Length: 393
Image 1 (tube, rainbow, N blue to C red):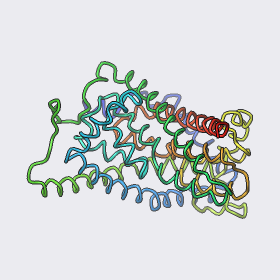
Image 2: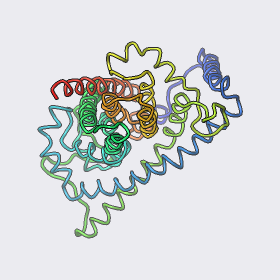
Image 3: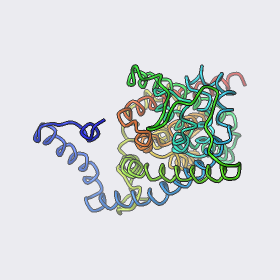
Image 4: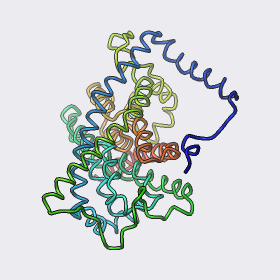
């Protein structure tokens, strides 16, 4: 690929988009300025980006470093190869992915979406995948991101609800699994078409050579030196991944949060972080007549939880607690919240940066579309699974 291909293609210096884009950008900015005021809107943008950098990005970077070291160790000493062999009969028919992908499920379930990126940086892990399977790891990992945190938090609301939520959380977890299958399989349809004849080629980076069948690559030296090298190399890849997601998290998540959140507690705008215009919840409330039969929400306010989960699962969890305290959420809602918060887990704010890190930017739109469908299916499945469980019980 020559330098011109990497940079892009030529267009006329002045074309319709030259004039249309500034108008669209100004109109989008006016959405916020008209309600928040120019000074408050700009301050909120900068303060939100700063808080995301400190509270979110650095945390994710720390997760990536630790998980990178662990995954590198597991790859070096053959655990990934073992997982691939043992779990192949499950992962292949269900997700159309090699057994090694199950390791990505575990790492993201225990931490967050970007944890799977530390695995993809490891050539020993990547070699198990075909080219068309590799981008789908973003969808698979995101579907299980923050799973342990979401399930634990939802169950901890049992005292506030006045009844055990174990069954609701369990149905929600099953719903998230169904959503992950839908999202991953749909993404694979897009990626196979995108790569065409190259789809079934082994996924390798530049300068890498194919690994003989039933063999794996290890580092030079004894067990001690290999262990230290694996930890340090994995940690370095984690730092690289943490830094690579900064633009996506800061830019996209800032916009999403400002579309979801509202003014401060007293109803005024102060320019503080995480203030917004509540556009997305307002739009969602207009289609409540559709959402009620699909998800069985106990109140119109409940739609705010999955909508908030689009940008940040943590914010959605805090909103869930508020709804429970106000009596606006029931066990069925908890099942749906668990499924959608886990399956979506802030994918609008991480998908773009994750796909960019995998060098799959042309497929960002397809990944988001697939995961949107997966999250909706997760919520619907959780609702009807809980209804079925209630009828049987």
